[in-house]
Amino acid sequence: MNRREALSSVALLLGGTIIGSSAFLSGCKANPDAAAGVLSASDMSLLNDIAEIIIPTTNTPGAKAAKVGEFMGVIVTDCYDAKDQKVFKDGLAALATKFKSAAPDAQQKMIVDLDAEAKKYQETKTAEQPTHHFTMIKQLTLWGYFSSEIGATQALRYVAIPGKYEGCVPYKKGDKAWAT
Image 1 (tube, helix red, strand yellow):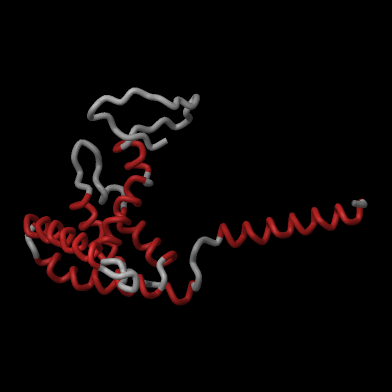
Image 2 (cartoon, helix red, strand yellow; image 1 turned 180 degrees about the vertical axis):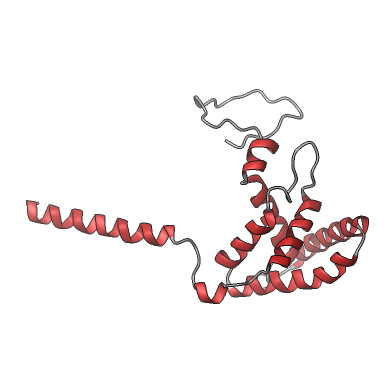
């Protein structure tokens, strides 16, 4: 290979890296105009309330403190396709009226019943049927909480800068899982 071919190859490689990185950094939003405004502020507030029932405040802050509703809003808007956005939004709208007017105990029972319904639906659904909206809500709640600063540093064990890899660490019953 001569110098001209080498420079041409390096230029092609560098150009591909720059173009590929801009596509990677722009995120997974396929069509920004189509997904704009999928969830409103009141939807995200409702999602925070639902997430707080799924991961309540105990000796560590709950999902509401981690602002999981806002996380769900970003993921649904930027990463879900139009079909899944519709399932999510329609399911949330159906839940909203009953949930907001219910007492806290009734809200918790509603979420437990919805979880059982979603599990039953997932077991019997075909490949063509969409995922149950509550399954989406629950998965996003767990993902949002445990990837947040609160979830990673207070609910899980966290070492900001681990010193070395330890392949076998003794586990005592009741220990927190590792975030790092």
